[in-house]
Length: 376
Image (tube, rainbow, N blue to C red):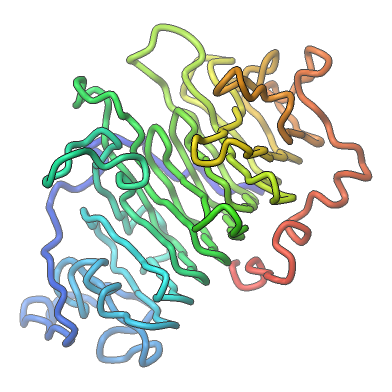
């Protein structure tokens, strides 16, 4: 069954306002006497005095770990095979995992993804200190470029709000951009509005494989998007209301930009889509053909998934550009249920045959990489 609804919805009031202290020293920081008197915040994952492995680092914003910020721990974790155990708290910072830090694992201590939140509030149109704006990629709170990344029991968020910045037109605000191959997320949350979860790759010719299990993602416009080969299994997608708009559509759940040479794009299976918006105010998907890849051939298959009434069953798909109509892309469904899955107009939602569905599986999409075997 899909994971329970892991929210409240994203608002600035939903996060602590304290900013985690910065620190990038490689030497392990000693705990203060006050911190030592508090219970260990790392639960079953050990502590700096009893590490899971020699390549485990502990992050705690109150000072009981090796570092007080996630980025400081990532910077110290040079090379491959490091594990970060992150104590409950809100970490207001941007974090980048470059290509050299392969096979890295992040574990949220406590087992509840609501307990550990990594959040910032840049948008594409936010002015940069040195001039210009961040752009969509630059707005990401967390950027993961390394192969073999795994995250468990964490929240990745971008709490930038349109209402707070009426003068900014670049409203894309990414919670996480993932580009590495073999990237797995288990029981994580992704919170934002526009462009929340950017599942992508490092280059057009690189078909990065990504797996999302029992995750929760919310947003409004294209909030799951990119060109990765990505499987979303037992996930919950939630569309938000739009007080800034007077009518439908409010937005779009998926916006794949799959490269034409890639035989597979996004697969959504055994999941659900719910909504805070009025019935039929959201489209299930639209194809993204970016200017950087005008030959893109977006691919999305949604199967065995419950689509709530927030999805427009009459016209579940639409165009992002009239030059690339959705009917010419690789969109398909199979055995979906719910009011948003009703086939009301012939041809408006292509269906897989039983024979085609046999190859629309996580095994086919991800090949010899089987992240679900160690993700539960």
